[in-house]
Each structure stands twice: as structure tokens, then as C-alpha cells.
Length: 205
Image 1 (tube, rainbow, N blue to C red):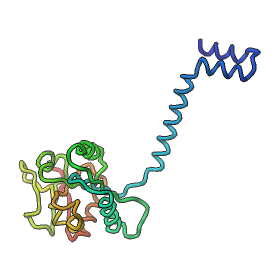
Image 2 (image 1 turned 45 degrees about the horizontal axis):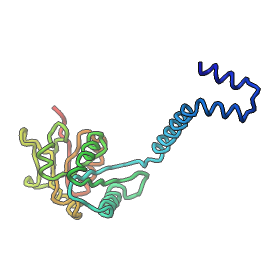
Image 3 (image 1 turned 180 degrees about the horizontal axis):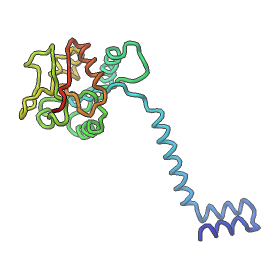
């Protein structure tokens, strides 16, 4: 029916201006919907191509921190893991406890973090060997290691025992864990090696 109406309008003797006016009058909402869809697709594609490549991402769930503190942490991480300044970006995202926790856990579930830092309360509430890597660590005192209560497996390291974190207020007095869904395990091993530690991941049984 709609095609017939359009065909009749285009075949009429009316001027092009009148034809365009008729089509707009009858199909403007359809045209607007199509236009909005096209704009959304263009925006999505631009965002996809303009998104910076993230080489390593540390997520922190803790006290409120300033943008400057986050940038300082990210710059120090860049110097540590990428001294030759290759293409890519190092991110340290600090999420404030409370309402921001929902976003933190959503990003954690989406495998956006390669290393996470949380306080003891959060550690006790969600950290386990199902979601976090079981670690074998050398170069850290046993008192600075955190285990999963039920199975006594090491899954966390006191952040104050890690020089990179102890040097920054925003990442001190927290617990570092490695998410199982991280795809940057080699970079994590390198990170701890730079801290004077040997970190290995225990293979699943």
C-alpha cells in the first residue's frame, strides 16, 4: 500500500518540490526513524574505531580519589610496563566504594580489568578461587598474603607490600587480586617481576 502511494506520487504531474512535500508529509516519521538509526550506526562505528587500545587495566575499588591521582598512577604504570612507549594505553580506574561498586563489578564481569584492588570488606564478601586466580608468590612475606578462607588458597597480596601501590595513597592498604577472566596474565607476571616478586598462576585441577 505504501509503495503504491509513493509510486503514484512520483508519477504525478506535480512539481518535484510538491512531490517532496507530499512524501515528507506522509512519511516524515518513517524518514526521521531511518535518519536516527543511521546517525546511531555512524556514532557507534566512530566510537569503535576511536576507542584507544588498552594494554593493561587496573581497577581499584576504594576511597575517593582525584583525577590527578588516577592519571599519576596510569603514567607510572606506563613507564613501568611500556618504557619504550609503544602504541597502547595503561589505565588505572579508581571507583569509589558505595554506589560506584555496581559499575566496578560490571566492568570486572566484562573482563575489563587485568588486576584489581579492593579493601578487606570487599575481599571477604566476593573474592574466591572461582573468580580470582590462585597464586604462587615468591618475594612476599606470608603475613602479606590473603587466602580464600574455605580452601586456604592464596588469591590476594597486600598492596603495601607492592612498591608501585605503596607509593600512592589511593592504592595503599588494599588487597591486589588477579581476575580469572583477564587476558593479560603475561603482563601481570611482568608487573610483579618489576616489583621484585615472582608471581605464577596455579593451574586448575
